[in-house]
Image 1 (cartoon, one colour):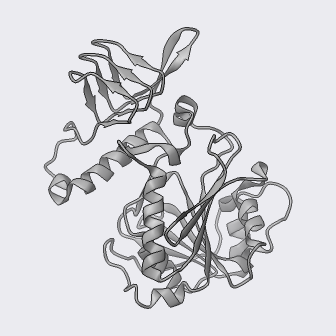
Image 2 (spheres, rainbow, N blue to C red):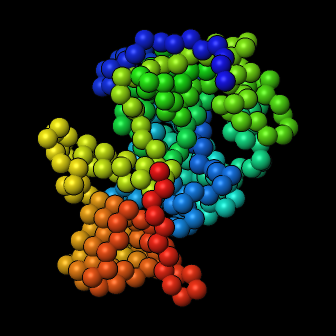
Image 3 (cartoon, rainbow, N blue to C red):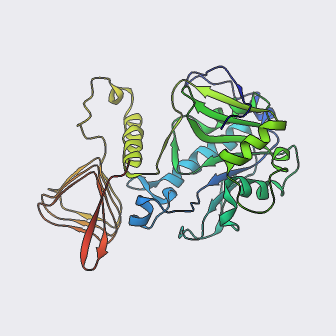
Amino acid sequence: MLFRITDQSTIQTGRHPGLGRLGHQLSDLRAVVLLAGSVRANQLRKATGRSALEMPVGSNRSVLDCWREQLVTMAEQLGIANLPVRVMVDQASGMTPGVTQHGPVQLSIEIDPGEFRGTGGLLSDIAREYRDDDLILVTHASQLLFEPLAELSGAMAEVHADVSMICSANGTPSGLMLMRCGCLRDINPVGFVDLNEQALPSIAESHDVRVVRYDQPTSRSLRTLPAYLETLREYHRRQAGPNDNSPHREDWEKTFGIVEPGARVHETAIIHDSVILSGARVEAHAVLVRSVVCPGVLVARDQSEVDCVVGARVNGNHFVLPAQS
Protein backbone atom coordinates (compact mmCIF):
# COMPACT_ATOMS: atom_id res chain seq x y z
CA MET A 1 0.00 0.00 0.00
CA LEU A 2 1.37 3.43 -0.98
CA PHE A 3 0.90 6.59 1.02
CA ARG A 4 2.75 9.87 1.37
CA ILE A 5 5.78 9.73 3.65
CA THR A 6 8.66 12.19 3.67
CA ASP A 7 12.06 10.50 3.86
CA GLN A 8 14.96 11.87 5.89
CA SER A 9 18.67 11.52 5.20
CA THR A 10 20.27 8.35 6.51
CA ILE A 11 21.93 8.50 9.94
CA GLN A 12 25.01 6.45 10.73
CA THR A 13 24.52 4.15 13.71
CA GLY A 14 26.53 5.41 16.66
CA ARG A 15 26.27 9.02 15.49
CA HIS A 16 23.38 10.90 16.99
CA PRO A 17 22.39 14.51 17.62
CA GLY A 18 23.59 15.90 20.92
CA LEU A 19 21.24 15.31 23.82
CA GLY A 20 21.48 18.85 25.14
CA ARG A 21 18.77 20.30 22.90
CA LEU A 22 16.62 17.19 22.75
CA GLY A 23 15.15 17.66 26.21
CA HIS A 24 13.35 20.72 24.85
CA GLN A 25 12.24 18.95 21.67
CA LEU A 26 10.83 16.07 23.71
CA SER A 27 9.32 18.30 26.39
CA ASP A 28 5.83 17.29 25.17
CA LEU A 29 6.54 13.56 25.64
CA ARG A 30 3.80 12.32 27.97
CA ALA A 31 4.12 8.54 27.83
CA VAL A 32 5.86 5.55 26.30
CA VAL A 33 3.64 2.74 25.02
CA LEU A 34 5.21 -0.73 24.82
CA LEU A 35 3.04 -2.95 22.61
CA ALA A 36 3.36 -6.44 24.07
CA GLY A 37 0.02 -7.98 23.12
CA SER A 38 -0.75 -10.41 20.34
CA VAL A 39 -3.91 -11.76 18.74
CA ARG A 40 -2.22 -15.12 18.06
CA ALA A 41 0.46 -16.68 20.24
CA ASN A 42 3.67 -17.51 18.38
CA GLN A 43 5.69 -20.71 18.70
CA LEU A 44 7.85 -19.52 21.59
CA ARG A 45 4.93 -18.25 23.63
CA LYS A 46 2.86 -21.39 23.08
CA ALA A 47 5.71 -23.60 24.25
CA THR A 48 7.10 -21.51 27.10
CA GLY A 49 3.91 -19.85 28.35
CA ARG A 50 5.77 -16.54 28.43
CA SER A 51 5.53 -13.26 26.60
CA ALA A 52 8.61 -11.95 24.80
CA LEU A 53 9.17 -9.47 27.64
CA GLU A 54 9.66 -12.35 30.09
CA MET A 55 12.19 -14.24 27.98
CA PRO A 56 15.79 -14.14 29.26
CA VAL A 57 18.73 -12.42 27.61
CA GLY A 58 21.02 -13.60 30.42
CA SER A 59 20.80 -15.84 33.47
CA ASN A 60 19.34 -13.03 35.58
CA ARG A 61 18.20 -10.53 32.96
CA SER A 62 15.03 -10.42 30.87
CA VAL A 63 13.90 -8.49 27.81
CA LEU A 64 11.78 -6.31 30.11
CA ASP A 65 14.90 -5.52 32.16
CA CYS A 66 16.61 -4.28 28.98
CA TRP A 67 13.67 -2.03 28.15
CA ARG A 68 13.50 -0.71 31.71
CA GLU A 69 17.20 0.21 31.67
CA GLN A 70 16.84 1.98 28.31
CA LEU A 71 13.80 3.90 29.55
CA VAL A 72 15.38 4.97 32.84
CA THR A 73 18.51 6.15 31.01
CA MET A 74 16.40 8.10 28.51
CA ALA A 75 14.34 9.80 31.21
CA GLU A 76 17.48 10.75 33.15
CA GLN A 77 19.32 12.07 30.08
CA LEU A 78 16.34 14.12 28.94
CA GLY A 79 15.63 15.47 32.42
CA ILE A 80 12.15 13.91 32.64
CA ALA A 81 11.16 13.70 36.31
CA ASN A 82 8.33 11.20 35.84
CA LEU A 83 7.87 9.19 32.65
CA PRO A 84 4.80 6.92 32.47
CA VAL A 85 5.57 3.71 30.56
CA ARG A 86 2.47 1.74 29.63
CA VAL A 87 3.09 -1.92 28.79
CA MET A 88 0.02 -3.13 26.91
CA VAL A 89 -0.44 -6.91 27.14
CA ASP A 90 -3.26 -9.21 26.06
CA GLN A 91 -5.38 -11.19 28.49
CA ALA A 92 -3.57 -14.45 27.72
CA SER A 93 -0.10 -13.05 28.42
CA GLY A 94 0.00 -14.24 32.03
CA MET A 95 1.65 -11.00 33.13
CA THR A 96 0.19 -9.48 36.30
CA PRO A 97 -1.20 -5.94 35.96
CA GLY A 98 0.34 -3.40 38.30
CA VAL A 99 2.47 -0.29 38.66
CA THR A 100 6.10 -0.11 39.78
CA GLN A 101 8.45 2.86 40.06
CA HIS A 102 12.01 2.69 38.76
CA GLY A 103 13.66 6.05 39.39
CA PRO A 104 11.97 8.49 36.99
CA VAL A 105 10.06 5.72 35.20
CA GLN A 106 6.56 4.70 36.29
CA LEU A 107 6.05 1.32 34.66
CA SER A 108 2.50 -0.02 34.44
CA ILE A 109 1.44 -3.41 33.10
CA GLU A 110 -2.00 -2.94 31.55
CA ILE A 111 -4.38 -5.45 30.00
CA ASP A 112 -5.48 -4.26 26.58
CA PRO A 113 -9.20 -3.51 27.17
CA GLY A 114 -10.08 -3.96 23.51
CA GLU A 115 -8.08 -6.91 22.21
CA PHE A 116 -9.87 -6.78 18.87
CA ARG A 117 -9.25 -3.07 18.27
CA GLY A 118 -5.95 -3.63 16.50
CA THR A 119 -2.84 -1.56 17.16
CA GLY A 120 -4.26 1.50 15.42
CA GLY A 121 -7.44 1.33 17.46
CA LEU A 122 -5.52 0.84 20.69
CA LEU A 123 -3.31 3.88 20.07
CA SER A 124 -6.36 5.96 19.17
CA ASP A 125 -7.99 4.99 22.47
CA ILE A 126 -4.82 5.78 24.43
CA ALA A 127 -4.38 9.15 22.67
CA ARG A 128 -7.80 10.29 23.91
CA GLU A 129 -6.27 10.53 27.39
CA TYR A 130 -3.84 13.24 26.23
CA ARG A 131 -3.92 16.66 24.56
CA ASP A 132 -3.50 17.16 20.82
CA ASP A 133 0.09 18.43 21.08
CA ASP A 134 1.22 15.74 23.51
CA LEU A 135 3.70 13.16 22.20
CA ILE A 136 3.70 9.42 22.83
CA LEU A 137 6.63 7.15 22.03
CA VAL A 138 5.34 3.84 20.68
CA THR A 139 7.33 0.65 20.19
CA HIS A 140 6.83 -3.07 19.78
CA ALA A 141 8.12 -4.81 22.89
CA SER A 142 9.25 -8.05 21.22
CA GLN A 143 12.65 -6.70 20.16
CA LEU A 144 15.98 -5.62 21.61
CA LEU A 145 17.40 -2.19 20.84
CA PHE A 146 21.05 -1.92 19.85
CA GLU A 147 21.11 1.88 19.90
CA PRO A 148 20.29 4.15 22.87
CA LEU A 149 16.55 4.82 23.08
CA ALA A 150 17.17 8.45 24.07
CA GLU A 151 19.11 9.11 20.89
CA LEU A 152 16.65 7.28 18.63
CA SER A 153 13.83 9.30 20.18
CA GLY A 154 15.82 12.48 19.71
CA ALA A 155 16.44 11.71 16.05
CA MET A 156 12.69 11.36 15.53
CA ALA A 157 11.92 14.52 17.51
CA GLU A 158 14.32 16.54 15.35
CA VAL A 159 12.15 16.13 12.23
CA HIS A 160 9.16 17.81 13.96
CA ALA A 161 6.60 15.54 12.29
CA ASP A 162 3.17 14.39 13.43
CA VAL A 163 4.44 10.83 13.10
CA SER A 164 8.09 9.88 12.77
CA MET A 165 9.43 6.35 12.62
CA ILE A 166 12.81 4.64 12.61
CA CYS A 167 13.70 2.43 9.62
CA SER A 168 16.86 0.77 8.40
CA ALA A 169 18.45 1.87 5.13
CA ASN A 170 16.49 -0.75 3.15
CA GLY A 171 13.18 0.53 4.54
CA THR A 172 12.59 -2.15 7.18
CA PRO A 173 10.67 -0.49 10.05
CA SER A 174 11.99 -0.89 13.58
CA GLY A 175 8.57 -0.62 15.21
CA LEU A 176 9.65 2.58 16.99
CA MET A 177 7.48 5.66 16.40
CA LEU A 178 7.03 9.12 17.89
CA MET A 179 3.41 10.24 17.48
CA ARG A 180 1.52 13.46 18.15
CA CYS A 181 -1.77 12.54 19.79
CA GLY A 182 -3.83 14.95 17.70
CA CYS A 183 -3.15 13.00 14.51
CA LEU A 184 -4.72 9.90 16.06
CA ARG A 185 -8.10 11.57 16.62
CA ASP A 186 -9.53 10.62 13.22
CA ILE A 187 -9.05 6.88 13.71
CA ASN A 188 -12.37 5.08 13.98
CA PRO A 189 -13.31 4.89 17.69
CA VAL A 190 -14.91 1.45 17.23
CA GLY A 191 -13.89 -1.73 15.47
CA PHE A 192 -10.57 -3.22 14.39
CA VAL A 193 -8.01 -0.79 12.96
CA ASP A 194 -4.61 -2.07 11.82
CA LEU A 195 -1.86 0.51 12.31
CA ASN A 196 0.22 -0.15 9.19
CA GLU A 197 -2.52 -1.08 6.72
CA GLN A 198 -5.25 1.33 7.81
CA ALA A 199 -4.27 3.97 10.37
CA LEU A 200 -0.95 5.20 8.94
CA PRO A 201 -2.22 5.61 5.35
CA SER A 202 -5.19 7.57 6.69
CA ILE A 203 -2.98 9.76 8.91
CA ALA A 204 -0.54 10.44 6.05
CA GLU A 205 -3.34 11.90 3.91
CA SER A 206 -3.65 14.96 6.15
CA HIS A 207 -0.65 14.92 8.50
CA ASP A 208 3.15 15.00 8.27
CA VAL A 209 4.57 11.45 8.43
CA ARG A 210 8.35 11.04 8.17
CA VAL A 211 10.85 8.20 8.11
CA VAL A 212 14.21 8.50 9.87
CA ARG A 213 16.60 6.01 8.30
CA TYR A 214 19.68 4.43 9.87
CA ASP A 215 22.41 2.80 7.84
CA GLN A 216 22.28 -0.30 10.07
CA PRO A 217 19.39 -1.98 11.92
CA THR A 218 18.83 -0.36 15.32
CA SER A 219 17.00 -3.37 16.78
CA ARG A 220 16.33 -7.07 16.28
CA SER A 221 13.11 -9.04 16.59
CA LEU A 222 12.32 -11.73 19.17
CA ARG A 223 9.17 -13.08 17.55
CA THR A 224 10.37 -16.55 16.46
CA LEU A 225 12.89 -19.05 17.78
CA PRO A 226 15.51 -18.28 15.08
CA ALA A 227 14.97 -14.52 15.55
CA TYR A 228 15.19 -14.80 19.35
CA LEU A 229 18.41 -16.82 19.28
CA GLU A 230 20.03 -14.70 16.56
CA THR A 231 19.17 -11.57 18.55
CA LEU A 232 20.78 -13.11 21.63
CA ARG A 233 23.90 -13.91 19.58
CA GLU A 234 24.14 -10.28 18.48
CA TYR A 235 23.43 -9.02 22.01
CA HIS A 236 26.14 -11.17 23.60
CA ARG A 237 28.65 -10.34 20.86
CA ARG A 238 28.13 -6.65 21.60
CA GLN A 239 28.39 -7.27 25.34
CA ALA A 240 31.71 -9.05 24.79
CA GLY A 241 33.17 -6.03 23.02
CA PRO A 242 34.48 -5.21 19.54
CA ASN A 243 36.85 -8.18 19.34
CA ASP A 244 33.87 -10.55 19.42
CA ASN A 245 32.44 -8.86 16.31
CA SER A 246 35.45 -9.74 14.17
CA PRO A 247 34.53 -10.60 10.55
CA HIS A 248 36.81 -13.64 10.92
CA ARG A 249 34.70 -15.08 13.75
CA GLU A 250 33.13 -18.40 12.75
CA ASP A 251 29.35 -18.85 13.04
CA TRP A 252 29.81 -22.24 14.68
CA GLU A 253 31.63 -20.74 17.66
CA LYS A 254 29.60 -20.54 20.85
CA THR A 255 28.34 -17.08 21.74
CA PHE A 256 26.16 -17.75 24.80
CA GLY A 257 24.53 -20.39 26.97
CA ILE A 258 21.78 -19.18 29.30
CA VAL A 259 20.69 -21.24 32.30
CA GLU A 260 17.97 -19.56 34.34
CA PRO A 261 17.94 -19.83 38.14
CA GLY A 262 15.84 -22.87 39.00
CA ALA A 263 17.07 -24.93 36.03
CA ARG A 264 19.37 -27.89 36.64
CA VAL A 265 22.10 -28.61 34.10
CA HIS A 266 24.76 -31.29 34.49
CA GLU A 267 28.30 -29.97 34.21
CA THR A 268 29.05 -32.27 31.25
CA ALA A 269 26.08 -31.06 29.18
CA ILE A 270 26.84 -28.82 26.20
CA ILE A 271 24.70 -25.67 25.99
CA HIS A 272 25.58 -24.02 22.67
CA ASP A 273 23.71 -20.80 21.90
CA SER A 274 20.72 -22.22 23.79
CA VAL A 275 18.43 -21.22 26.65
CA ILE A 276 17.43 -23.46 29.56
CA LEU A 277 14.39 -22.03 31.34
CA SER A 278 13.68 -22.32 35.05
CA GLY A 279 12.24 -25.72 35.99
CA ALA A 280 13.97 -27.61 33.16
CA ARG A 281 16.57 -30.33 33.73
CA VAL A 282 19.44 -31.35 31.45
CA GLU A 283 21.30 -34.57 32.22
CA ALA A 284 24.89 -35.62 31.62
CA HIS A 285 26.40 -35.39 28.13
CA ALA A 286 23.22 -33.96 26.61
CA VAL A 287 23.82 -31.56 23.71
CA LEU A 288 21.63 -28.54 22.96
CA VAL A 289 22.37 -26.33 19.96
CA ARG A 290 20.35 -23.20 19.08
CA SER A 291 17.42 -24.42 21.16
CA VAL A 292 15.15 -23.43 24.03
CA VAL A 293 14.26 -25.94 26.76
CA CYS A 294 10.94 -25.14 28.43
CA PRO A 295 9.97 -25.43 32.12
CA GLY A 296 9.20 -28.97 33.28
CA VAL A 297 11.27 -30.64 30.57
CA LEU A 298 13.88 -33.34 31.15
CA VAL A 299 16.57 -33.59 28.47
CA ALA A 300 17.90 -37.09 29.03
CA ARG A 301 21.48 -38.28 29.21
CA ASP A 302 23.18 -38.24 25.77
CA GLN A 303 20.10 -36.66 24.15
CA SER A 304 20.79 -34.11 21.40
CA GLU A 305 18.47 -31.37 20.16
CA VAL A 306 19.28 -28.84 17.45
CA ASP A 307 17.26 -25.81 16.25
CA CYS A 308 14.14 -26.54 18.27
CA VAL A 309 11.91 -25.70 21.20
CA VAL A 310 11.84 -28.65 23.60
CA GLY A 311 8.39 -28.35 25.18
CA ALA A 312 6.43 -29.74 28.08
CA ARG A 313 4.75 -33.13 28.15
CA VAL A 314 1.81 -33.98 25.90
CA ASN A 315 0.21 -37.39 26.56
CA GLY A 316 3.23 -38.34 28.64
CA ASN A 317 5.83 -37.46 26.00
CA HIS A 318 7.89 -34.34 25.43
CA PHE A 319 7.27 -32.60 22.15
CA VAL A 320 9.95 -30.99 20.02
CA LEU A 321 9.02 -28.09 17.76
CA PRO A 322 11.40 -27.39 14.88
CA ALA A 323 12.47 -23.80 14.48
CA GLN A 324 10.13 -21.55 12.50
CA SER A 325 11.61 -18.84 10.32
